[in-house]
Image 1 (cartoon, rainbow, N blue to C red):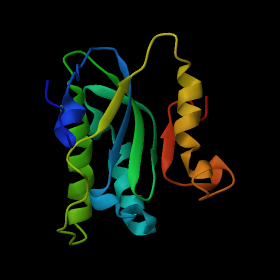
Image 2 (cartoon, rainbow, N blue to C red; image 1 turned 180 degrees about the vertical axis):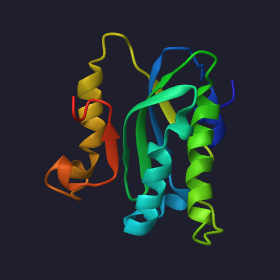
Image 3 (spheres, one colour; image 1 turned 90 degrees about the vertical axis):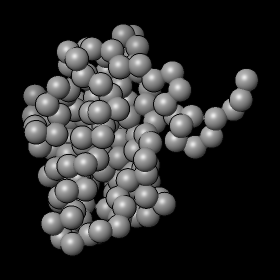
Image 4 (cartoon, rainbow, N blue to C red; image 1 turned 90 degrees about the horizontal axis):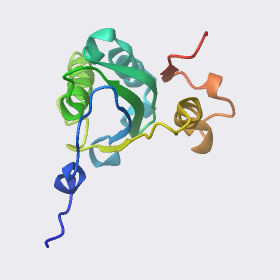
Length: 154
């Protein structure tokens, strides 16, 4: 057996299941803190938040950190996780290209974990959106502008 390295290793065993909920992480190219810039982060957040980004899936919760993104995604019928995340990445890239950005935005791969039915989904969402607190960026989730969850306001 050979050991795979890099982004290819992340795809091994990846399976997209309709209705399944996934915790996904994708990283900015070279881990650069691209989204530390508020204009860039705001443009990316708008693209991520757009319903057009998630046509056959639902983004239940997400947070855009300076150098990465976490999301909880539920796939719809005939949805493919790789294509869904690829679409999100490409919509962010297109939004940023309007500012003249030509350099890469995202690393090629992403990390995913299928959540089990017994996982507490709201607790996982709280964990995701509290990422800026753990990173020392803010003291309260509400002080960080680049996140959303379907439960907000309900």
